[in-house]
Picture 1 (cartoon, rainbow, N blue to C red):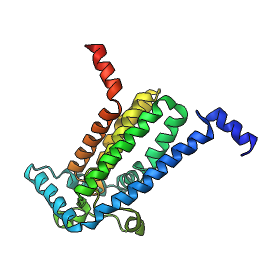
Picture 2 (spheres, rainbow, N blue to C red):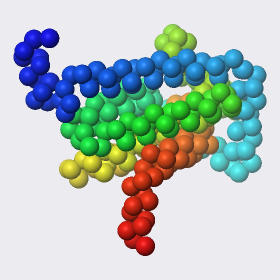
Picture 3 (cartoon, one colour):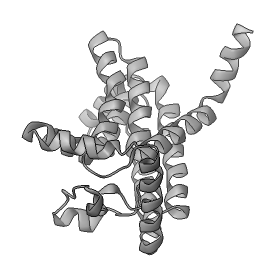
Picture 4 (cartoon, one colour):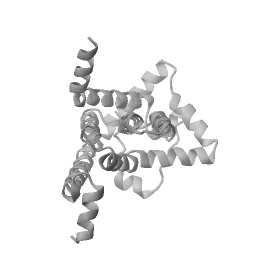
Length: 241
């Protein structure tokens, strides 16, 4: 490593290149394990479709198949259709990855709890995928849902039966809350405060998640947040007592 690169690391990185490499190893190692474990959920397609039908039955009984309304709304506009598709494909890894990098470099004091919150929420989600594989709405065209995924990337990378809980929803909530709190400019605070709702809409409008999946994802994020931030929360509660 040249002197210039070393100096750049000392100047711009909170703990130098070694710690950045360690964080990247943790993150990409987790992604590898995530994909391997997530693949276990596609071994029970019959169970996944049965669980998907159970979700549809529940939502139908409460007259709340909102996903159909969102899909129809998105399909009426080429711009909106493209926007929700982009959001679905990029909100999970691209946005989360860039958010982690930005917090690591610019708000390092918040990084470790932020990282651990995301990791723990995803671990909880993986447990859900294994014990309750669920087919997404797009796999039920007879109910009016649209399957817009036609390319080979989906066949290669996506697990079609990992809908419950929605980790898109969970990670969007975690990123949105964290960045809304630590960003300084009001416009950015507003953007990140609205980000979770936009992602929730997008994953339903693309037929990838039921609203019950989104609700479960949010509960996963909240549960993980309580675990990660239990000490700060406890101190705040005691201070107000």
